[in-house]
Length: 110
Length: 159
Image 1: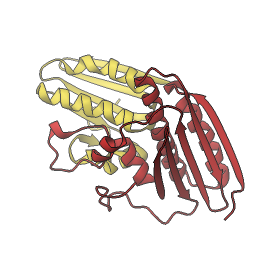
Image 2 (image 1 turned 30 degrees about the horizontal axis):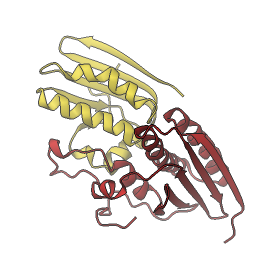
Image 3 (image 1 turned 120 degrees about the vertical axis):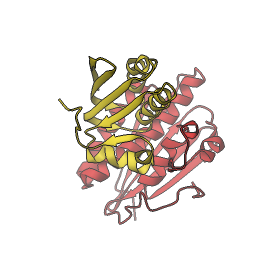
């Protein structure tokens, strides 16, 4: 089981592509890869989840942690290109009402 | 209804192995005729239960094993996930159970009970038995009419 992370930097914005399965095994790696992005003031982190084939509470926990951290540093977290499955999870957990979540690519697409 | 088949897996309680459980479950549930959506729901439920067991083993440096049992019926699938160790703090987790609401402040976003909440929301029946270890029992009907996420108020539901 694999998860890959790709980052593209442009000024204060970071676009992150995550690919594969996010579970208890891969979530710590994801957290490690993303955590430093939330340390800067006013950072905008956009995460493209198009290629994420599995997500559960462990992955949601990583995104919630990142969201909180960015918020407290006046930054922003956007999650984009969610599949129906992933969208359902964010909906079920109520995160859809709190976080910036978009099924489309917005301007952050490839 | 009699159980048609019982399949059991025993794995070292490590996060690396949860993917293997999902793969096995996928095969079982697909061949039973569950829809794609249902298979994905089942995958989350079994993973969450395994994550609980694995994290518990990890927190206590116990190593240990997780046993996953699949009871296959004509009209439903039962899954049981048991850890061999002592219990996780179920009451605490239960107290944190539930979705985030629009009125949740950023500070209130706890992750604790989210896994258990997902299991409850996705399965038709859930029971947690807390004897010498913790066993999570989950059941889903093959042609589930229950598509209830978003409409129920999970707080106060019994597990």
